[in-house]
Image 1 (cartoon, helix red, strand yellow):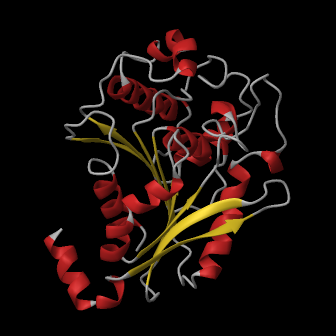
Image 2: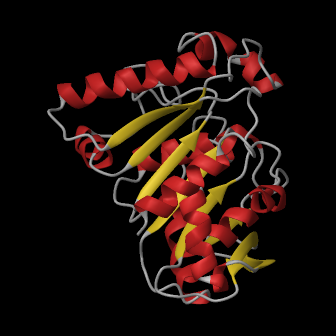
Length: 285
């Protein structure tokens, strides 16, 4: 971080940041508040990061977690908020609205995944960011969204995607979606394309609770614990499955796994965000 602070001292325009919110819509998804933090001055080195909030749907709080890093690392950080009222339940948000809770396949346009690219384009123009290198990050429920976004949307233009501390996975198995690839609509070609883009799974080494944290998780806990006894183990098992699948498909794999030496369970702010911010700073250059 010392090196980064020196860089900030040399480029003081990135020290002070504006924080605010704007609304964004597509033809099918209307009036999504987008909280943001942006450097006072945008230059050729400014980069865009999309952050997906957790299950509390608290985009403003997630934006606030990134303010210091936007200042230090010259990042525009945008956090769309998908309220429980407008986007109810795990299927609509965490799972990207690919299928609804009754198992009905949703149109491409109505999937939340379809909002990301137009939002990125709008934000690059709004903030006059000169580079189209951008990243996407999620923690918890947001990480559910990000890792599924990566798998379901291999055509996406992101430069780096990071998912941190999600509870369970879309595994590389023949289990039924949302726990595996069966009935997912994901082809081997899509997987190969997804594997060929940079994705990082971040796991907190202290994220080892063995109890369900919501009624929904309790209702599916047998399927969740089938992937491992806690988030750390489930993440490791998922990534091992990805390695095996990439070998089976003879696919080039640009995915990685890092384990962060955390001490405070599932917490995001002080444990995961600093590492993710530095990774975006380096990769999005």
